[in-house]
Amino acid sequence: MLEIGKSGIKVPFLGLGTWAIGGGTWWGPSDDALSIQTIEEAIDRGIVWIDTAPIYGIYHSEEVVGKAIRGKRDKIVLSTKCGLQWRHETSMFHTAVDGETVYRDLSRQSIMDDLDHSLLTLGTDYIDVYYTHWQTKDPSVYPYEETMDALMTLKKQGKIRAIGASNVTADDIEGYCRYGQLDVIQEKYSLAARRIETELVPLCQKKGISVQAYSPLEQGLFTGKVTMDTTVAEGDTRGRNPNWQPERRRQILAMMEGWKPLCEKYGCSMGNLVIAATAAMIPGLFVLCGARKPEQLRDNVKAMDLHLEEEDLEKIKASLV
Image (cartoon, rainbow, N blue to C red; front, side):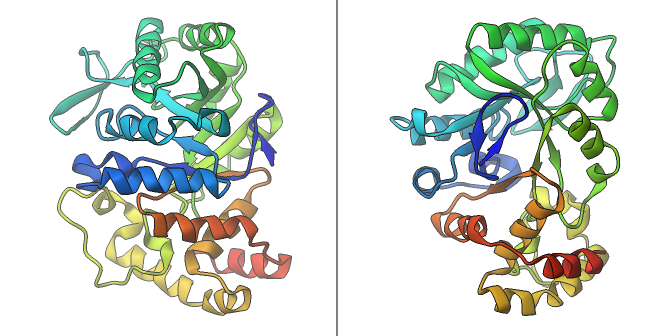
């Protein structure tokens, strides 16, 4: 069990991400009954950190998660996010998705409104970890002091237990820490995307802030089931992933070919190997893996019991491209 920052909240390193469960433009149709079964089985198998966000399917992921955790709230650690909204226009455009124009808004009022909506949608009266989803492009518009004051107020009210920030810079971390306790950051990190190792990880280690990695399997690329012939539908989020582009994908698949003897040695799938290796790259790293089918979840959970020998981990590190 690992502690999330200085929050006192302790969970296993592997969590369940529910972006794909939201379906919509980014992921296509999703079977809600299967998604609920997947979440329920995750909890039963010891994956208790469940992560969601309002923008995943425009509230749909939160709605599905809310149904799945009913009667199980005391068994899980629940995280959701604020700062992206489509109720009103701001000066900071973020994206357009599922017929909505989405803006960034880290003002005090928007954060409060976002939380109230999430509590209602998720069917709970508190959130364990509350992340700011995407950061302000101009701190003079939404100052760190205002954002953190809102989050610290919610913490004092007992509506959230820990504060997180996602998709940050070092300046964002420093800015938040000037005005309150930041416990965790959530960042894109995988064996093929290690940007955060250089600056963010050392800074977090210095300040006692945990790191939670999202997309460690590169949206399925590291499962061992993807080939150069694999195609994705138009609009699918994987089509915008740099690691899915032909030249880069070819490099990664060749790298994975060299790891197959390790899968045989440990009797594990490629996905298991990659999750375990990713978790071992950074001390205390939390890893967030998506799944919307029980069979995907059942494979991911095996990584919790996979312990790589140091020499094998070094072989993987040496082969990274």
